[in-house]
Structure formats: structure tokens, C-alpha cells
Length: 171
Image 1 (cartoon, helix red, strand yellow):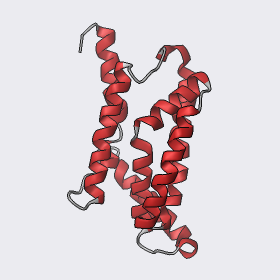
Image 2 (cartoon, rainbow, N blue to C red):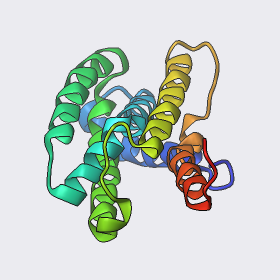
Image 3 (tube, rainbow, N blue to C red):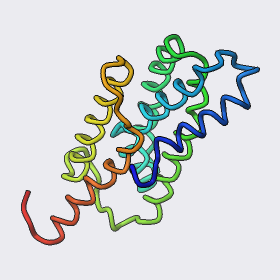
Image 4 (cartoon, rainbow, N blue to C red):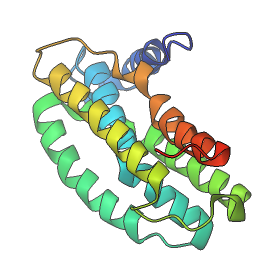
């Protein structure tokens, strides 16, 4: 993530969105922080990935419906604390979850049955939990964690589990 400079890219998108929307949304200077924080929180959770995969594989959108309700309540709190820039996080969440759903449609049978007890899902969830903890440290202004650059870990952790399983190495 550091090589790809994901955090810098998110920040640049936030600045661009702020320049385009600050006259309508107000809150000059806070839109970037609200956008980046909300985007990260809404994208790193296991429901975003697992729900998108289930949607792509089976057309089952129930997890995404639950996630949207949770995100809706969280966005209210974020908007109250960080400002109106939170609404702009809808675009990256849509693109992220949509891309995962389309990829799952394409992979189809290769993923097999996906449940919350699938080993790679467990590792993905654990990785997402660590990233959410990093976001908490950032929001509480305790430690500056470049969580955006850690986003590839959400894909790398399950890939390692799948590779080890393919090689016959028990966890």
C-alpha cells in the first residue's frame, strides 16, 4: 500500500471533491477528513467484502442490506462529528463493493461456498478488525496510522490462507 500510495490517492480524491463541493457542503477543510475517514471505515469491514462476495456469487444481498443500515447509522454520527463530507464516501463504497461483487460473479465456482467460518474469511475479518482499530487511533488523535495504505492487507491475508491450503500446509 505504501508503494501504491493509496492513502495519498484517497487524500487527493478528497481534496478534489472538496474543491468541487465546498460551496454546496460548506465546512472548508473538513471535507477531506470526513471523506477519507468514512470511506475507510465503510470499506474495511468484513461485511463489505463478504456481503459483496455473497451478492456476486448467489445474488444474496442480505448482508449488504444489513451493512447499509449499519453504515447509515454510523454516517449520522460521522456527519455530526466530521461534517457533510461523509456523504461523498458513498462513491468509493459503491465502486469498491461493486468491483468485489463483479469479481465474485466472474470467479464463481472457484471461491466455493463462502461462510463466516471459511478460514480465509476469518483472516480477512481479523485483518479488517485491525484496520478499524487503526482508524479508531486516528479518530481519537492518538496515533497517525496510514490505514489507507494498509487496505491491500484485507486481500493479502486471505490470499495467504488460500495459498497455504493449496500447498497443503495446515494453519
